[in-house]
View 1 (cartoon, helix red, strand yellow):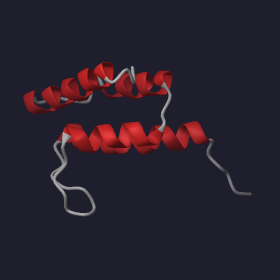
View 2 (tube, one colour):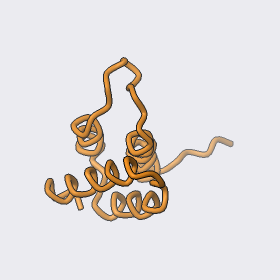
View 3 (cartoon, rainbow, N blue to C red):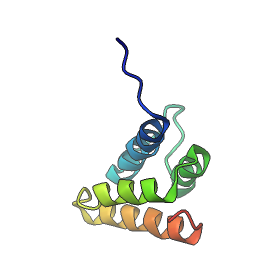
Length: 87
């Protein structure tokens, strides 16, 4: 029997994994382009994730950033999501 994940779980993972990579300071995407705020905002926008699911993603990642740079990247994405009315 094959378990199939629901679309909300797939969408949440589609946003959460790159967001974690961006916050951790990952240098490059698969196609060797440097990661930027525009890159992660494009992923969030194109995913079509719902507000409540995005709030859950940010809530789960809130304790993740440890270093000053990570906290700054987390706050930048969070503030940009608020500006774009994703949150």
